Length: 353
Image 1 (cartoon, helix red, strand yellow):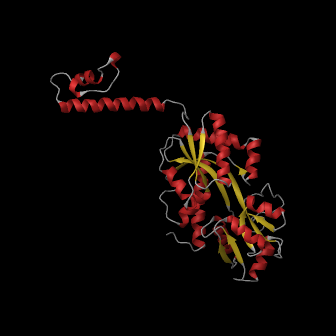
Image 2 (cartoon, rainbow, N blue to C red):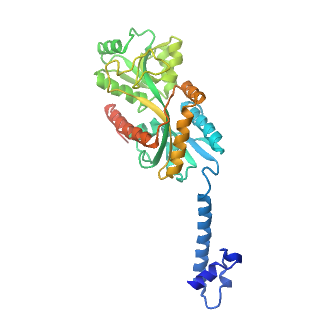
Image 3 (cartoon, rainbow, N blue to C red):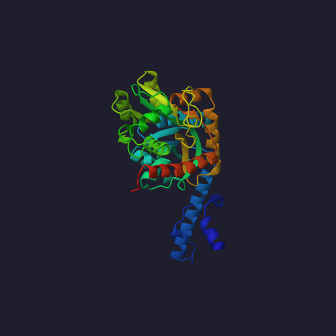
């Protein structure tokens, strides 16, 4: 061992340096010399790793993956958070869009990224709780991620065309019940959250309606406004402009409390369905095993950001109710939602492929 120490400290001041087997002391075989060279290189790598580990986080740009194309709520929220984090931490937070497969492509990318805090996911409920419930994914929504904080929630509302002769949820139920299998409802597609939510509600209410799936929420809302379908569940941000214009009517909101943007609209709970709740959320996730210190720091920054009046106002523009909860609270949300949406998929008759 003393000889190994001589070999790996051949330099000024005893610092390790690259080792040349040809310069090994007499009596040392080339095999031993190569082993010592490998050991020296490993010690050099360890020293570099330790130096990097001692650097404060973040010491280089951080990427926030958005699993959708640019535009829309998730992208806008990610850019708002990235700007805020960059200002507070003095480092660049870059938003990168990786769309496809209802968000599963971006989610899988983050699940496989190094757990060092430099690749984060601005997730929506869809790719964490719904996509795994309706199709096989190459990531586990519980095991492959570390929850950081939910930025906020976005409720859904039951909306009907302006000419449908109903003014409340009770009116709607009575109207549909008198016409079993004759009325349709729109959604953003088979397996989308508004599809599963509506199927779940119809099951609870004992109603029979025909599902019409579209390629996204925008075309389904367009057909509702045009009167081609009479009803749908929509997020608040998409429904509010059309309701304000008088093209549709909002009957009830799916959150536990009334939505601040539409305080006059009752919840499903108030309307007799306390077991029915459906909200989407956006939140930050990191790869599993990300250091706790990094997770806690980002969670604290998220909580501070959403309480800022300017940030809260911009979130309200997306129809978002600010949250900023702890990693443990966010983990509980995810665990609850995975069970809820698996059950909703079963009720909707969707079998995981």
